[in-house]
View 1 (tube, one colour):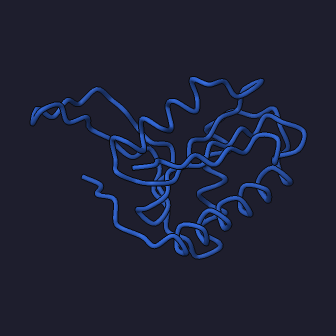
View 2 (cartoon, helix red, strand yellow; view 1 turned 135 degrees about the vertical axis):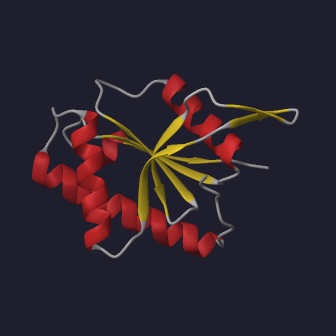
Length: 134
C-alpha cells in the first residue's frame, strides 16, 4: 500500500512547478476535448520524460477509529509520494472538485494537491493549487 513521505516546502514547490509545466506541455500538444484518462496517461508519460516519479490510480483507504474502510477511493496521480494531482476534463471546476482534493489530502496526510482541468482553452484557467492547513 502507498505511504506518503514527508517533504520540505521547497521540494513540494519544485514538484508542483514541474507538474504544472508538464501539464502545460500535455495541454499544448493535445488541447481540450479529450477524455480524462488520456490526459492522465499523457501527464504520467510527460513526468517520466522529465525524470519525475509518479503513480497512477493510487488506492486510498479510509481509516475510521481504527477500522480500515476500503471504499474504492483512488487518487489520479501521486507525484514522488508527496503531491496529489486530480485530473479533470470537464466544462468547469466546481466546489465539489476542490472538496474531493481536500478529502484526499486529509485522508493521505499529503499537504498539497493540484486540481487540473484540461478541458479549457488556456490551462492556467483550469489549475487550482490546494493546500491542507493543519
